[in-house]
Amino acid sequence: MPRGDVVLLLPYIALLVAIVLEVVGTSLLQLSAQFTRPLPTIGMAICYLLSFYLLSVSLKVLPLGIAYAVWSGVGIVLVAMIGLVVFGQRLDLPAVIGLGLIVLGVLVVNLFSKTVGH
Image (cartoon, rainbow, N blue to C red; front, side, top):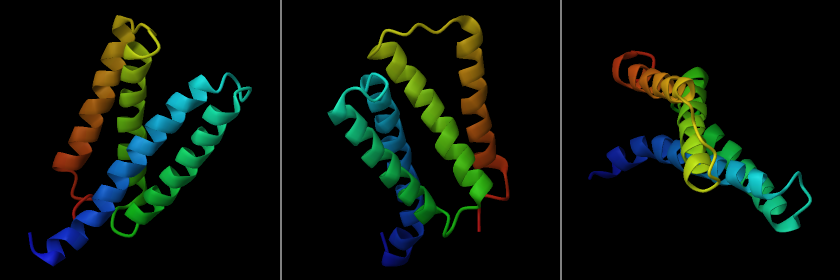
């Protein structure tokens, strides 16, 4: 891959890592037990700070609304999956349908919107 292509991917990589950090931070928020457990609380704060920093890096190329929609939408779905798998939090049919619509919305924005491409 030529160097120019790597540079063009950096904002997207930053956004991907920001999403992962936000999901980890939110999972640690659950484990913090309302900030009564110091290590998960500190980990959560660090993850959130790094996540917002990397989200801001992605804004060098991506429009704010698009980057935030992808960051929050993908984060919501991943956190719901972690809630299900790790914390045993069940999802009813309306929740599954709603999460599916969020995924569909992120796909529509990224595949069809001319706002994303520069």
